Length: 282
Length: 169
Image 1 (cartoon, rainbow over the protein chains, first blue to last red):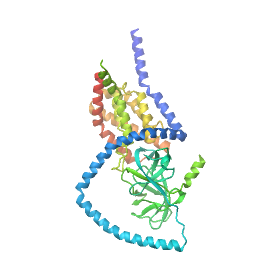
Image 2: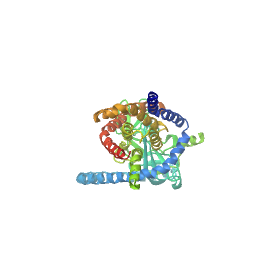
Image 3: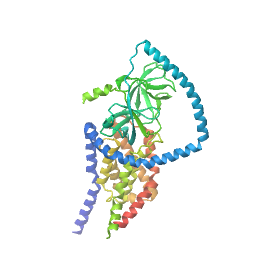
Image 4: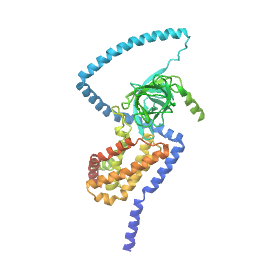
């Protein structure tokens, strides 16, 4: 009798050890379902973002204060050298300003000569970054502006220094912006003064890789990379970054490469390009 | 039992789960100073590992699965991805519970390194299978290194909670 009791107890303990197996199998089933039916996953994420983005935003406040204090201290320590750097930069910018004014005048005159019709004005707004989604599958952020504020799918998102990403999902008051460095990101770009056309692809690292480079094209370190305007998602000429390494692979460092900005400027250029086809395909 | 003791009891009993949820929520906090995501490192693995050894009843497999699902929804991974990895970590640790529970602190640390190493390796394969692309190896090593290095601090926090839970259970 006692033996039977101990045997039952042992079986029970062994079954307890195997309890995670159904959960593991269920996870695998969920994984297969979620990769095959993206729409349900998107819906779940949209609803959860609505709920959790404000919570994450509150959690990020102490972090922001800490970073602000650290930046202030750093600023105090580097005050002298920073002052010198800024005055040098100011001198340089003043000479650039004169050149820019001259070029603007020339451009106006030439536009008149060839009867150039300018692009329609873009609409923009600034939104706060509420949360960040960083997984091996994508790099995106949630911003505190949505359809009600005039954000639409395909809008370009800019940080302080350059292009940060593109709006991929919109809800009433929040939107998701996919970063240009994310795995899913593919940007038609032109490189340097030669305007070499290629594709900038993200791999979740802070850098972008240049692919589909035409044979014989010469790309050098320091070449500026801008959007080419192909596929009709971004207008031509938006600054993306600078070529950082030329070797077996050509990588570029984006202008917007220092973490996630606090605010993003969302710009609607009235272009939707291939995204329109995507919508129709759905 | 007074209501204050009862509240304390509930607080400490749900504390491992709450700590995991908090750590998962932290992964969504935007970091402005670094080009890498410091808070995306899965510190939650340490909590799961620790409680799978010392209190698998308080942080049981069902709760671990839920934490994984929550992480999937929040981070933008396919649903089931993190829940699979976290449940697997719980399963592997729980299988070796007796050995790890009786091991020295250093032994537990090494055990953690091995278990989490397996999880990182499986996640590497799963990502390649699901998204048909590899992941940046340096980032994976960076995450792995930081998770292992943070073990003493995280284990201290978990140890404190475990001690308080012991007073109520």
